[in-house]
Length: 186
Image 1 (cartoon, rainbow, N blue to C red):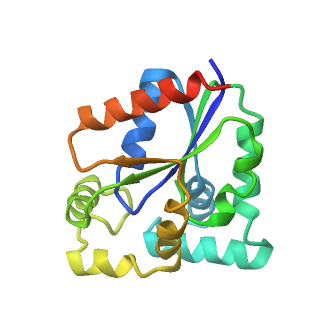
Image 2: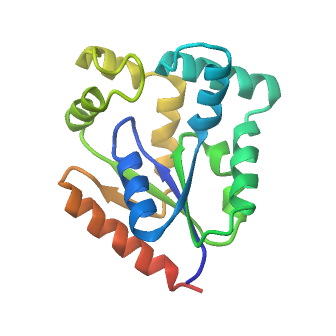
Image 3: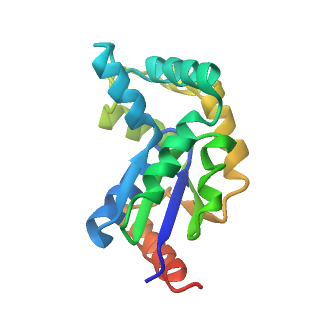
C-alpha cells in the first residue's frame, strides 16, 4: 500500500471527525488535528476550550510566530509517522497545507454538508463547552469568523469532494473508495 496523507477540509460539523474516526477504526490510520495543539495550550492555561478561545489562540500564535507555524508542526508530525494512512483533520487555511503538499501521498479532501444538518450535529455532539446551548443564529455567525471564511477558499482546491448529507454508511462507502483509489496510485 502506498502511504496516503488525507487532509480533511470542511465547515464546522461537516463530518471530518466522523471520517477520521472511521479511517482510524477500519484502516488503523493515525490522525492529527490543528486544534489538538491549541487545546493542549488552553488546558495548560486552565482556559475553557470554547470555539472563541480556540480561534483567539490560533490567531495569536499565527500572528506572533508566523501564519505557517501550526502547519510546520503538523507537517513534521506527519513526516515522522510510519503509518500507511494518516489523516490531518481540520485544514482551515491555505497555509495549513503549505508543507503537507510537499509530502508524497498527500490528498486534500473536502467534506461538506448543509448548514441545517451541521447545526443539528454540533449541538448534539457538544465537543466544545459552548456547543450544546448554541442557537442557529449563533452558529451562522460563527461562519463569519476568519478561520471559517478561509475554509471555502481552501475547499475549492480539494482533489476530492465528499457530500456528507447522507447516513454513516454512505460516508463510509465514499471513504472506502478514497482509500482504494489512493492506496494503489504510484
